[in-house]
Length: 492
Image (cartoon, rainbow, N blue to C red; front, side):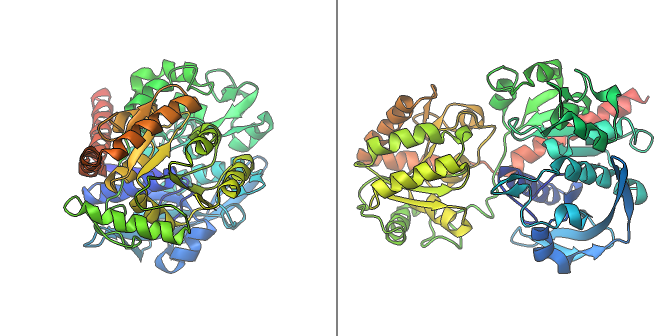
């Protein structure tokens, strides 16, 4: 079984958030399980700076029609394997199992999707080029795959291209589209239709038309052979108007070919017993060492908070999806009882509100607008509980990471949060999206915090949970095998 994993990002080659972390971890797990998998990514500046000496120029040049223009791209490649400690070993190769689609005008930029002023105006062109560039590389190098696994809107046109312009070459290949977050769909003005290579024959309700615009993700939902999303609950939620972002009707048409597979986390990277970033390593056997990490975290954040007081935190994007609007209402109500740490970046309105609150309580709140890998690890190890009050959450990684570090998640009962956090056992869940419900859930944690024996019991329950990629990987492989069997049966 040969699988192509195609994504706009994958750690450690490129990452802006959950998509990159998930695809990168899945790629590693596939290799670990002996799957014949090949990863395809754009050759961003960040990838070039870190891996330019570890890739080879394949000598493959191809042209992609972008409207009336033909843009030419190149191809970089590497061979990837796992080291003894589970890290990726990347070595130059003319035709390995990692390929970069290269076009400097499109991908050699400071950021991946846009700047602080907004997304790049040519993102439609950029990811049309990436999608068709991937398909051209497959044709030129005669790379035949049983499964092509696409991720999010950036690669969602690939199944549509495969059933039209590339039908003959890929007639035996099955496609899977994973929706990591339905809130991001690749919606562009109708005028961008020309750059896709399609005409009005595809611009209709059962194609890529979406309220007079074009919608890349919608095309992938209609034309992929199977659709997955990143948790079972989220797979059900997106069939409703509340969570469907206008595509719930389309998804209901495909619900027999839709399933949710929960994300895992990479315990080679997220494990307090081996974490090089934290002050004091610890595990289930010596989890009391977590307290020392709390002491150090309070010190470096310069908080006037006793180590005996509960310390809460938030790590993530400062956007309405993540529940920042209700969180900023709650913080002033609880700040006399807890210390609070916020790390993240996002919408300028919420960034400004966080700074306002921090300035009002400078000795009780630490805020860092941005992302720092080392600091994130130290926060997971040092805080007592993490707030994840998301309006919706396809899967979520913060709750999985926090549990491994013995940090208790306080979450809204939605998506992957509902699938992974057990209310009153490994965390606290609230249902209604409002600040009062969040405050009530925090109060439950504060009551638990006073009962040390029960608190330690909860911490141990969290740390014993296994959210490794092993089970999720097997679920994906099982799905791949079912699609291949379906193909073989239909060809008899």
